[in-house]
Length: 433
Image (cartoon, rainbow, N blue to C red):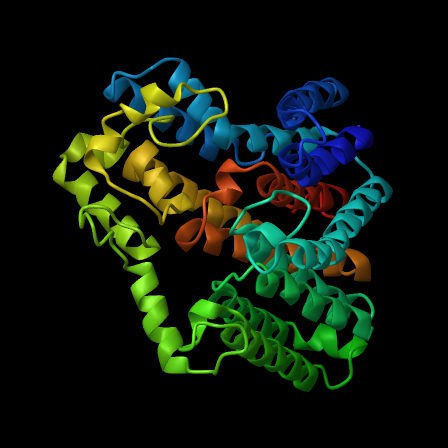
């Protein structure tokens, strides 16, 4: 079954770019979905009746809310199925992993492939920078344009690099790799990195100090090194972003001056922006979320609880675009930009769905935290800590940043692989915990 996981990651991280370059046909990207279902069926057979269903109750409730929302909106049909599959397909992948019976050596091979794929992003981005210039189109092998991915890949990579430095081997190549991955966000002109990186760094420092007795056995003076590396990353990233990203300096040019007041004002305006030609359209993440909450409240208890139904707002490669745009949601909520997983969930599943998925985030992060604290073997201690940091990243991105980890192919595959691996790790090492 490991080859199926290999194929899933390779297709997910390379196919969209190759499609946009007309190297492979569009249907190649669709292969991931049937592969997930095939992987699931094989895993169920291999489990020999000893099926594990982690977080099944949470997702069953989320499914029931989705069906209830579709019934409430009189839209129980193909659109509902297509909409719900966008969220549930990677939970199916997660269940397949939990029941696949993979060994540690097999997981290590998959982890090595993921590391190689991530490392490829750096030279690929440099080559694309030379060809296309700075911007979203110059980052990674996963797509020609995907705004959130450079930030998320940067954060996950930094988390794992720090984890391996402090728990596995204190080699500076991990720290250098962390700095190297920052280049993805700078090349892609992703302003969000100067907000999310300090958030991740503060969380990492807090967790590191919590486990000081373990880390100091491997890394002498680790507290000083942890704070030093963290501060250097934040300072260099902020300076690099301010000087290299046109929108973050007063001169609006590469090489502009550093003006923190300008950055603060820009961030405030960017997140609360509304279309100047039509004020009813929001174009910032904060203003869009605020508008979604306001509209759901104004439309009454039913809409507040159940939203507009699965498939009413999210894009599906199989859905009828004209029918989707005629959905009532597009007559009530006017968003030009600023869709996040959180406000997307509120739109399609209402407050009930938002609350249930938020519970999943709490439960999965509690599981990842316990895994990290229970682990002792250096490699898996590093993996469990890196996965815990990734869970923190996933929750943060879900709440305030991008729907990519919900609706895309490669990032939800990555996160649910990490979550599934943690289930396997717990099962092998601590079956009674």
